[in-house]
Image 1 (cartoon, rainbow, N blue to C red):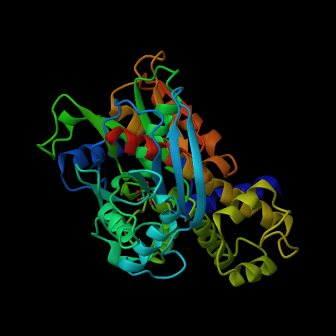
Image 2 (image 1 turned 90 degrees about the vertical axis):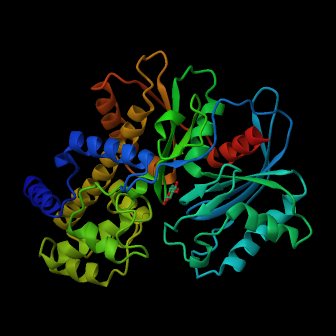
Image 3 (image 1 turned 180 degrees about the vertical axis):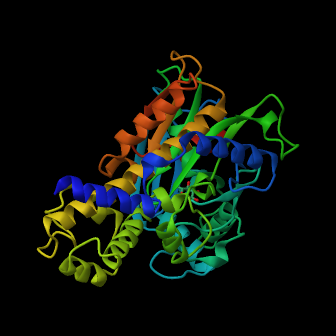
Length: 434
Ligand code: BGC
């Protein structure tokens, strides 16, 4: 049975464009690098390549508390952070809430009021706020940021175009607790800074922050002279760039990717993210199940069950791959062993393709940094996000693919993970700005 089922599943994933093994890796990497160049030059393209005005070489002052707000894809987190003289961070006042705008639509006033309410209990403890914002925002040289568009299905349309830092401080001021300076930074930039701050002992020649959780994105360090779309940058300097790689338009979508995209809040945008990240992998799995049921690839009872499934989460997809009999909507007796094996191959292919695409994304950022040409001084890649770390087999495939791509170009990388990277990195950014 095994080889026949496997052959049928392989044919199915190829037909629907889900097979990672047939990706033209070299061509995709070239397209990625070209799109990065377009974004730096301000030419039309899918990568925003947002300057952050965060140079990464500054000292982080010790013993100075800073407030941190972390607006992520699922949670809104608040903390205070202080770095001791040893460089070790201490996190206090930690609190976690749901991200506003996920369960219902928020107005801009409601959105900023809720952020202010969450920050209020700790707001008196520090003058600086590091605001880690996990969405595309254009950063201004004063450290504020303007939301370009929402991703990850957040519903708060009025917030688009608003200055996040000044609205937050205004909402705090109406509660008698304003006046702070705010540094807005993307979560990948925070991850990059956390990697640098935690990894001082390893002599790295550059730094990349990569996130693959609910959404995906990358930050790396670029020479100001190469950010040709701006004429106001100090020519000898360098700064972190928020690539917004989730919007890369070169990912080879199949019909199921397109069906998934059409059903999201932002069709046509973030199409790369929709092939790789936690908000969507389960959705691709659901699309694949429906196609398998339609096309007669599974037994009649399995098809009947599949047609009643309203959705599939990435966690359910992962549980199935980890143990197809244990729990979740597909664990019951309606699936024969042949059905189960077919679905297992399809879900594994979805994860495998995502891991290969993620490796291409990271490789493009590492190569664009121009660093890592000696193994003594690799490029540090700090990797954050639940999907990359918790999904069955993801990290192993991604790392193997990444190393192969970089080895071929004679470039070395050092992969790392820092607990609470967005919180630590946001504190670093706010303290460096001072
Ligand atoms: C957002 C990025 C963010 C990434 C990871 C994407 O949906 O556009 O700004 O860095 O998710 O959280």
